[in-house]
Length: 418
Image 1: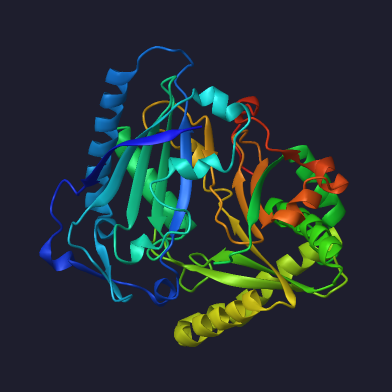
Image 2: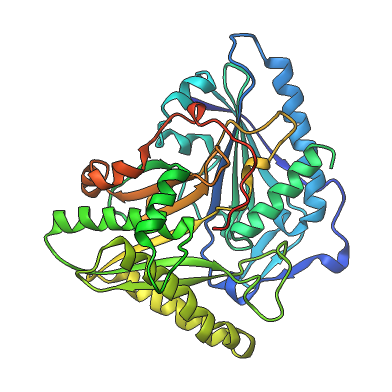
């Protein structure tokens, strides 16, 4: 699929930021966070005809830009620029806005999504650190021939985590509705339906983890199959380590509101020895990692946050760089209800979670189905993916890169826990 950028401009807040709000200090968590963009792409269908949608596209573009400009009044730091890694200068410099045209119909792309093509729907390179000196927010509105669109959004991790991203997107859509590893990696997309997840829960349950969560069992299955592939290729039994992000808003005392802006997540480590790769044990270690963090670190965050954050950061980085450890990074956006997003064009046809080029990334979101099913994007080195995607255990539970058009939403909406 060819994607051509046809317009570029800067969107500024519709009203100037007050003088007393012209600077926004970064938290300690933000300072330790790299200046890369958090990425999501939102696909919206509009039938599937060959009609010329030029006028309609112009109207939608104007609507999106106007709502974005108004939203920046409430999220004014996003229109600023990073200063010396300590603060955001809220100077209303604006955010980057791009328009592009794809040379196919949305249904053609969604029939069998080419994950490598997703990057073309974004206004920057996947690993870009442009937000360290440029816009903290970049948006690309992509028009398909059928009238469908894809909105690619990159929000700097310097000032946001997954919860912040969701808060901003909800605010924007309310306005629209009137309310570093150089090893070559390959992406694989999986969808695991709720009945399969329930079957995994039954296998993973143990006296220590009597009620495993959806994300725990799906992450455990993916990690198990990825480890089998890595060990088969290398012939070496290495220590396995999983880093998972824990939202601290409800964990610290007193709890913070869910719409608190900034990086308020902690990297929690789950260790396994060289030989243990059974699902029950992997899930147990994921749960134990979260429990240990709550016991040891949450209280310390109130007393000496610099020490807690810096020590956790150093530990994770040293293990990430080690050749003796199979390091996996888990990121979950499950339960953030992104499929409730509506720009005014109806429910989403699909929401993509573009992958970076780093090795051993596992990204989870709720699937379009809305019943607790999970969609996963996995980034593994090229030789490991070849074995991973043929793993019989994986294929017994997961469907590889199914068409989003064939994943039909169900009612009632998801109410179950993670």
